[in-house]
Image (cartoon, rainbow, N blue to C red):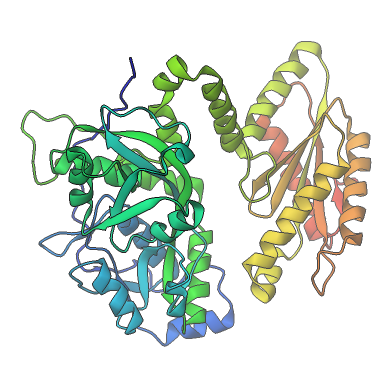
Length: 475
């Protein structure tokens, strides 16, 4: 018997901190803006924003003109970091918001996905959130392991949904009709008028519970992702650059803080039905995999193993460079320290930082900076030994874990890395160099102590003129 995947909905309480504007506490930007961007901000009073007024849990404008949702929380962060008020422009629906953007009645859309049609009047930042497009069917339908096997069916999505173009491009044979809203589309599925509804997990969860459409389930996942970017009018390149830097400034902690707020569960004997159903799974792909877990265990054991490997890879990999992230580095350090204490052995770490990386971003753009980070990761991976671990510690900072390596061996490796990077052509009209700090582990040290020593050595290398290797004052 198939195990239905039930859509879980949480009753939430949200603070009404937002009315029609986000006013930052400080009237200055905390972002690394260049002179042109700062001058641009000095000449504007506020930034006008249009949103989809009825797209929970991402965007929603209440009867009291309070703007709430995931995107609202992100926009509040952007306003604080940019140092300018972001003011909501009232619209009746998403279509009118797009029309206002065309007519230049708002400078930004809170979030949108890049399409060919929209590029005629909008430009887009890097995505600040990515969600998979899933398929909701009636509860009595089988789980969809291969989307290609149901392309002869009829699907529905909301009119104007940006992912529609992406879906048609990915699945040209797919028959997709459009409904005026999510409720109508889900009702068509529940009544058997169409086979499946295409949208994100969070939207399906909210809309089905709000409107009492309970005989549906998440039956499959497409290969199409809905990428949420801030959309900026395309004749304002400096504003686009500013918002792109605001998006780039987001940390994983920032994102989790916002998402965790929206999946907080409250239990009340007496519910406030105005808010009933404002729920969210969190990060779409991750929680969808968890939701599917029992089904996959019972019917697709090998598929489950593959998904778990993919999930582990994603959680331990830096998405930009493809090398280990801070989470995996911390885990590897803990294991290496335990091994060193047990067998009275030692190991070394190398902390590496790109010299004048801000200058690269400011003069050549973040795309060039990202390219440097990616190529640097490749160079490091090619240079270290098979049992060494290379990871991105944060920003332009990398960390190398070198098992069974003393200080002298780590210094030799660090100098080899320094020279190799200095000689490499990154495709920029300047020479990219790095500074490195080296530290050897001793049995009495904690991980924090070891990292601090490496960080101090790195600071000394920077202070001494950059493009150098330091370890406790040794070059």
